[in-house]
Length: 145
Length: 473
Ligand code: B12
Image (cartoon, rainbow over all chains, first blue to last red; front, side, top):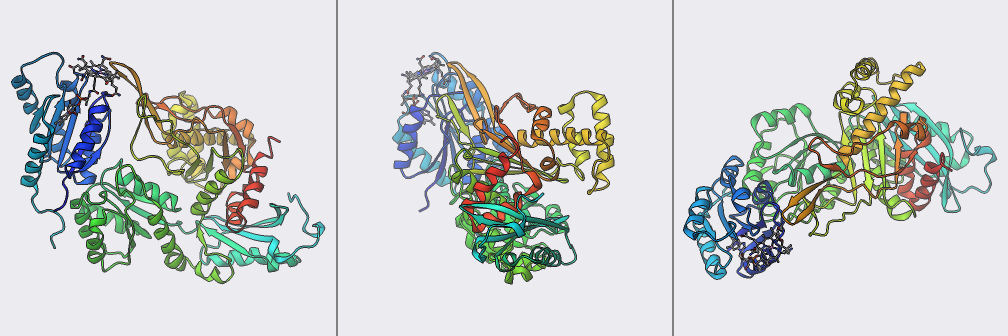
């Protein structure tokens, strides 16, 4: 079976690099083809990379507390750019201070993210969900003759 | 003026220490004989005729006859030739994302010596197909998708290209997974499949596609332009002039001390070409973050709206901000209108010459600014971080001006007129040379030296560096 391609990066002006490296190593180990854009990644850079690499999913990280501003409008932008049905995950320290996780989830869902994770997410469980979501999405594309 | 009279040249001369370099330009065909002395080339004689467009070899034969008249060394020595006549090498580039595969495709074609006739991002439409037919390019460079990446756009664009009425050569250098599909689908064309120019986002791979474009030029396109007839005369195949210059810039930067970082601005009537070498990046991933594919070791850019004659009106329009005041802009606009009517126009009065100098300064400034990368300060909660895109020219020590006008103009005069912008329209800092030395390519020898370098790389590079330094020495 072909590996699913996923795009990783830390959004906005966020420089927290450690978690991003861990995610890269972890998802590669779990058999995904990982395109890691590193820190300080704009929405368009995520989408550009997803288009060229034919990615099934984009995993956005936000650690420094400005996620609410940086992540807004991401799905709309994907729709405009022709990849509206791509899988979008977001995780990290998604808001400043302690908020009700249910509230955070609702907020990010309204922005069009499919799944939302906190800093203590169980990565094994995330990888399983991601594999399922990618498989469900994988409609035969492209090379049919 | 000849630095050396052939009759008074020191003996003995043998065939293997001279070379005749020829460049067929769109208006002039130039040739020079160089002799190889103690590791350096010396100009023996330089001759020029108007390019014989109806039959390109004719002008070359005339020049060779002229050089050989009375010079036995010129009769036996090897001949080497480049051409940019009859539209040069016209390429249409197709990619997906403008900043990724399309940017790579454009850069690759330019580095192969092409003239980019048009570029297309994402999906080709029916109208785009008609536009390509109207252009009638020599080659369509079809790219898109990293290896294992996007297939949809590539598939669609292959299908659309089959609707072309014309039969350009097609070089496929996209997603490896789609290579077979492309080869099968475009069976009605002469297709060359090469490795992907962008196999993954951080790893540009232009060389295989460059080699394919070069091979097509030599094998097929020279024939259409009547250049294959010269093959029996020349030591190496006739190559596109910008490819020869590109390789020359690379060799010069790697082999001559003090030239590891320099820019060459070739200002013509229709375009301004800029080449830069050795512009490494300072990104450290922490305080300075580089975005986009890493810049190549030698970068070539071509500005089709900056030039001294045909493009003069476009240049004045594009560079209004260079002058700022309305009176000068109006004066330059009328100058541009006059000179654009006649590509061979030569300034007749000192006033006209002054306007030409101003126009040249604006073209050089604009072309360098577009060639250079950008850096933007991002204020993060933790302090400033620099985001860098493109080539960093700040370490460039030398800028050389070439082309008819700059070759004839004192570089100190030009330096005083050229002011480089510090910021662009988006307020990003422009990564331009800081305090470079300005040299000129006196006597316009660039394409001739570059051709000679194909046979004597070190001797030609050493000679060029000396020649360019000439004014300053
Ligand atoms: C080290 C650190 C820094 C270093 C970063 C160095 C570097 N280049 O990486 C420096 C000193 C530069 C720094 C700066 C700042 N930091 Co800081 N930093 C930390 C610290 C102590 C550790 C971060 C870390 O590396 N963690 C280890 C990694 C493995 O964990 P992680 O990053 O959380 O990532 C994991 C999970 O979040 C999750 N995950 C992440 N993304 C995603 C995405 C998906 C889809 C999924 C499923 C999971 C997932 O998986 C990752 C791997 O396990 C944290 C506090 C903490 N203990 O977390 C604060 C912290 C993140 N920083 C914080 C802040 C506020 C800042 C600053 C704004 C101000 C400051 N205090 O200096 C600046 C911002 C700079 C900038 N432009 O980004 C706050 C954020 C507050 C918030 N969001 O609510 C924190 C939480 C500290 C705090 N409690 O106040 N920081």
